[in-house]
Amino acid sequence: MNAETSRKEKTAIMKDIILKLHGGLSAEAARERFEKEVGVISSTEIAQLEQTLIDEGLAPEEIKQFCNVHALIFQSALEKVAAEETSPSHPVYLFKLENREIEKLTALLRQLATVTGMPDVENMRKNIGQHLGTLKGIDTHYERKEQLLFPFLEKKGFMGPSKVMWGKDNEVRDLLRTAVDKLVAVKSDEDFKGYVSKHLNPLIEEVDGMIFKEENILFPTALEKLAASDWVDILKESDDVGYVFIERPKETAALIRELQSALMEEPVVRDDAITFPTGAIRLKEIMAMLDALPVDITFVDKDDTVRYFSQGKSRVFRRTRSVIGRQVQNCHPPQSLDVVNKILTSFKNGEKDSYDFWINYRDRFVYIRYFALRDKERNYVGTMEVTQEITEIKKLEGERRLLDEGA
Image (cartoon, rainbow, N blue to C red; front, side, top):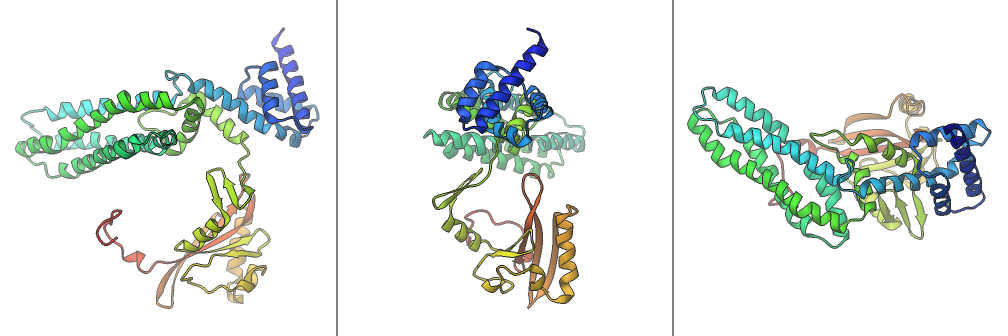
């Protein structure tokens, strides 16, 4: 069987599956038949086959019926990747790859820490400062671990990492911050010896110690407790946090993009809750959340009709329920009409996505922002106005940490 014959047969099978889906075949049954009769297929082949189907007259709307099957196929392919720790796409493999780069940095810092005599203080400070600046990227490595790996372990009832290791990560962050700050004060050989002893060596030891803890405790435990589907989810969300010192896994990048585009993640209303791609929340909780925000929100739909406003305790501008269903142009004085229409027009034609204004209003400083709301296809669905009184916010200086005295 030559490649052209094989492609035609695959096309025929896919077309039949799509038509069966349109007729009520379940996505799972379609996936099983697809894997059995079509077998291994790349994202490029799927795109080519889809184009062939369109060229043969099959409506794109019918092909969309296949989206969920795409997702299942790509998910299956990713799970095969995630099943092997040694795969260059496995999250643990990528964590370890970053650790090898972190070790190179600590080795360079350790080498500089052993220099004696120090003929050029300024040059030494510069070299250490550059390496410490690069090492700051470790925060991305830790954040990916904390925001992705820890939650999945917690779901398996394993709470240790988030209760203990997260605290150790923060110790490293503090040591790194202090090492950078204290470097400025190094002016002499004696200063340098004290700096190495008090700040640089403890940092190096903790960073290398964390690598040991990850690779001898955390990762083996995670590999034991997490399923392939868990690793797939971690891999898919890793791009949102990012990688450091390494390139993202190229061999899965296209696969993940295809999977994400194939998944038709739309909010679903079920009982008294709305399920979003990022979680579910009850209707009364949504209302409480919107009203608790320290901003005033007004939503205007794509037809310029006011549909909603939040009811916070201290709104900046008064809103009455009579505004609901009113054209937004009628909610502003004639002098403002040109500005209102300019904003809406630029949102609708895609020229702008936001506008910012700030004014003095009744002895208060008010920040007003307008945002164009768009769906996944970038179609305009409405405008959101966000108003915030920021008089006191403008006065903030320095920082107040969580649970600081007086918080």
